[in-house]
Image 1 (cartoon, one colour):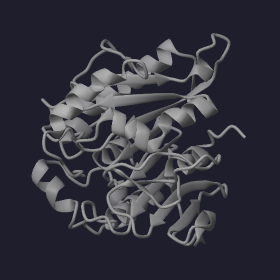
Image 2 (image 1 turned 180 degrees about the vertical axis):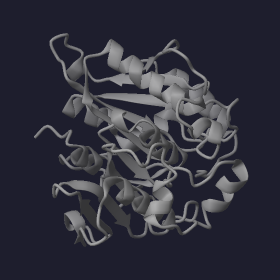
Image 3 (image 1 turned 90 degrees about the vertical axis):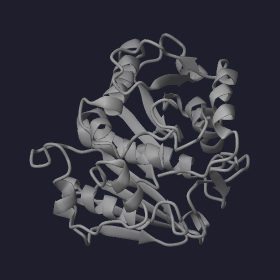
Image 4 (image 1 turned 135 degrees about the horizontal axis):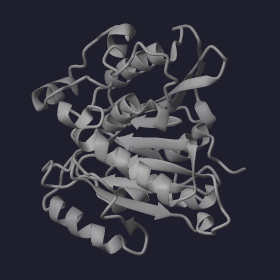
Length: 323
């Protein structure tokens, strides 16, 4: 889950954080921080009133070498937070932990429950819940690339914490346990059964209500093979007890012939897994620059305009849109 690098990018990335002080809040002391991560929070104006309660929160994890500014502008999370009344929590990787600024999704010590980066992110969420009037039934997580893989691990480790997650070019939990495996499986994705993937999840054999899952992946991704998303869906089918045939396939979704939406339902006939398969898209998110309600985001090195504002549809699938 490595995104492309540019010369001097890390220097620009480091100093760009300081230009965002008017947009996000730095939280230095959020509790135990075994993963040595940074924490930033965007509090929308619509939830700053003391009378507002039951506030949703979205945890947004960046990709490798991606600045916070780039993530916010490309995805449009802050604009959607303003329009729909939620908070965005941005965990941030540090250069000292990973020279490519990737979350360490391939290190067992960071993806295990209550260890390393996983524990740090959980403590950030606990901090937000404690200090703001959060609806604990409306906590969601989103990630791109390495951030996506880490998001899957967060849902695997703390299923009771999340209502749902959106995974852009991610991977199943447990696909890699060290750096060598991590580099290998991004291209050569192992093919396992749903049950085999399910057994990678802590307490997989207990009766647990796992979060709903939204998966987004471009067919032309040459960094993370799209097969990785196919295997992730297998893993979640096992956890959600979904039959292979319980799906609805929508081609030309939202009148866009580049987008196919496949949804799977649970035993209550509720959507629990959604997969957006995107034609002509590589290792990037998609946006739709414009002024309509379902348009937004901004084209950059990690975001491509195909007339499909993926973050908007994630918010819709999360049930956070205020109509």
